[in-house]
Length: 469
Image (cartoon, rainbow, N blue to C red):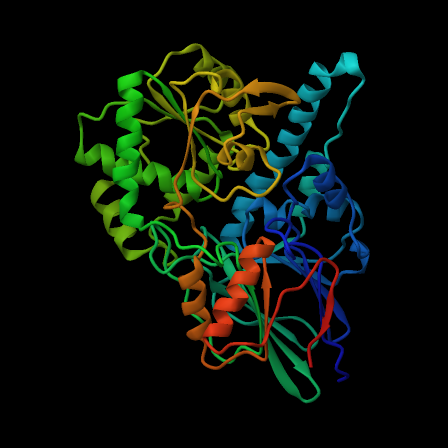
């Protein structure tokens, strides 16, 4: 069989969001992830609307996990002609059904609201896709179990391995026959930490020839997981004293459930710490139900499973208000604090959290608690960097609220976690591709690897193609 192995990077190359990696091998074209770009609106829209490859020319797609920056482009891919299977874990299929339908609804709702308030100026935006496009993409999903190899095309076998990042997340291991031998490619997707709040720790596999690894926190170390309760307690106590609102823009998948779990432990140990908690995201509510159904699975950390068995209600259904209806969400802005509102999206780029921010960002009793990575150009990043004024739905708002960041909750491997994973491989890969990181973090991680004697690294740029010999 001719050696036609190539990898081309069409996303998360020199940036964090929009993961899209195209493998050509054994005469087939396989796309690993099809994420949505998030950041500066015009630039992101342009990237999201265009594919530098022909969707109808793909033979398969493979998903690492269900975060929107890894699956959010699938409906548009299907709309533009994808007619091939999309492989993922069974839980990722469950989660993607919620995430993509919600993404379609949010885009339509946000566009409608933006167009309404800017009608006099003649400014309009259009959603990338609708619910029918999302349904079309979902109809292509083909679930696979963890740890079982299966052929997805002549000469190419796929095996999903636990990535420890979020529920359902997987490293993509591909064994490819080429020139009478087999080459193993491992795409980590987003990699979990060695010390986690809920998920089982990922284990490096053997005999990797080519490694594609994320570098989101390639130059940073996370706060210790066991610091989360103390920090949250401090923020809650202040909100109770000031009768303020704590608004937590949170990714609906994983981060929301981690925060609820920590709150559950905190309230159990301190019954007097009394503050109403609202999870204001229909998507997060549906995802939490999936977490609850699967809480005995092997992909959860043993300590979490032990606590869940003892507690019986680790996601606080007995005392947390889960608000689905729009009217319930709107009413939260009419109620005085103290209260905690957990709402999507994690980078403040859409959804109900924008309305909570719009109504509370000018109050000095408000705390905006950022609990995840904030990509450059997002509203979350501007708040994190201390902007005194920000635009929400195109309208300027003064920022009087206190903005706090907690890195404790990150479900991404940090610098030391990434180094440990690579050093834990059975042998050095022939080549290591560093993706899903800001340019400075990625370059710094390459230097950290170099200091460990690992020099066979590449930091691909958008559209770069590499031969895999």
